[in-house]
Length: 224
Image 1 (tube, rainbow, N blue to C red):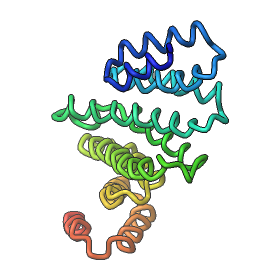
Image 2 (tube, rainbow, N blue to C red; image 1 turned 135 degrees about the vertical axis):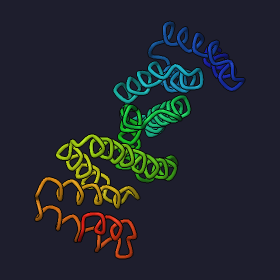
Image 3 (tube, helix red, strand yellow; image 1 turned 180 degrees about the vertical axis):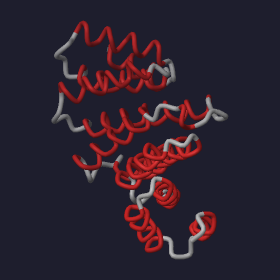
């Protein structure tokens, strides 16, 4: 009855009440047959209650205690979802803030959770959505690195700019921000007097973006 009452509260959107009932259920019957499912559902209740830290802790606890549970894939998915929506919430709150000032930790944590899901459970019903979210997150993380690289370029920190652009290129090679990362590398290496590295970056850019108008403009600015 305790589990049914908790589930009814959860289904009815009474998340605070559901959390209290799930906690009571586990306290009274820690090894009961409904306790395992309750431990997963309380994580969802925390998530809907916007208690991100508690939600993540609950998913991690569930995975640790029940690694072979038939719904453990959902625990990984839910963890990714918590971090994903936390990152989106941050985006909404700081829409006018420079991206270089934002910590991409939530986006990275979300990506890592989804990655673990699709690698360990490729046939999971949650895998397709996780893959779609991973694609978005890769683009967001790459854009963050490029924004940081551009920030350094504007302030004359050319070594740091080149390093951040190179990091984006290496870790997010399929992201749309790849072109801008290469452009930053070309410009930074040119200023630093490193023609070999500059030319390597230019070759990669020409190979991947043969019609790049930005490259033509940059070469004109560099007098080449």
